Length: 366
Ligand code: UD1
Image (cartoon, rainbow, N blue to C red; front, side):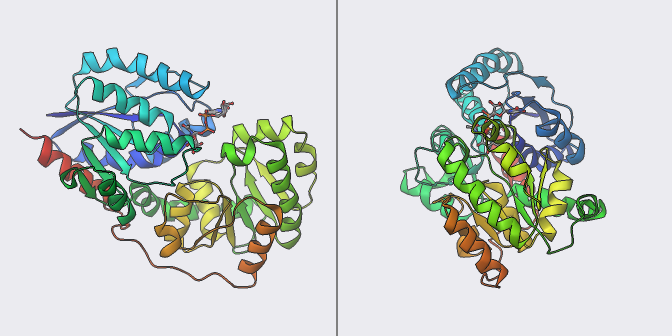
């Protein structure tokens, strides 16, 4: 049996691990172990995803919780080392680019356990983003680099990663989306919020570069004042963002806007239900840029760069930055019909996890 320790820590890790765990369970050659680092711990940032996506209960929870980047990374490392000593896995699999990803990969690499990185090779070329450091370092200590789009292969080759370690397999997030689309539609979540298909803007916001500085966040709130005059805005608020809005005294203003619908973070199915019927999505998330590409819903990304260029060259994504007037103008352009619908990147077909599991079985069977 091939024993694989799969590591998750944050909300966007859950939709990536779900199809991988499912494929490993189907394939009789694997003994998958699931470790949750506990980086995200709220019911609506973690547990709801396990339930809705059918992810098995984690075998171990490291209970690390919130803290500085160093705190989180170091505590995951300290808790994981004895566990890996005990489990002696054939491989450690990490997904994405969060602190838990790097911490897991680093412990395994130091113990000479092969590391598989799912969603390898993405680069924003912006080292001020914590994720850019996490993904670059993780890639360079990984043995199996599973990429989602061609740009990932090009970046890795340019950085000197040997070709034989790189596998373009497609996007596991899209596997999950395709499996849950119909279930999400059946929830009728629009009714709950009193919305009509194509009649609202969906917003997410949590990047430190957008929410941690008062003047930037206040500029975004100014933009939202105008956007909600055009169409109602639904905004599931990330805990980090909520805290900042309150700290900067912006919460009363935002919650007082007549067509702003503020909610707690939503479950996967509820959010997918809202995303697929939105007129336009405003976000600074990585994964949502990919999901809107598949759904062919216009996406305006409140950042100046993206590590997912296929969502722009082929998909529905556009970078608009975080200045108030740029956001408002971009929304107006979409509403006036200015954004084309795209094509789908290679292997964004619902079979990425199947490819990953097949490759791991072939390479790890001795
Ligand atoms: C992390 C990831 C980011 C990912 C995001 C998705 C890193 C460096 N960042 O950012 O790449 O896009 O998750 O959400 O790993 N909090 C809660 N409850 C929770 C989790 C967090 O209240 O369950 C609050 C805490 O106040 C915490 C803050 O949110 O301090 C930030 O959480 P943290 O895990 O540090 O980073 P995220 O901003 O969520």
